Length: 92
Image (cartoon, rainbow, N blue to C red):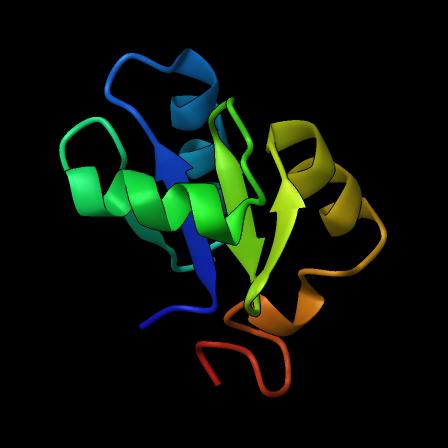
């Protein structure tokens, strides 16, 4: 299980952008497609406090928001511990 979870749908272009952003940085994530699974939709509603838009991104168990918040968190160094090359990161 990864420290990042991306709640998405199959028709969301910003979801694709968020996943590509994480992929480019080598940050692993679990994708939860809320359009394919009723239980995933229930989980999404609880974890995101009723958010109605995707993507919604959870980092270390905390819902940070969408793509904009993800990029802001990265600029602030909040994802540094998840980069594979960082001490304690996913890769080493």
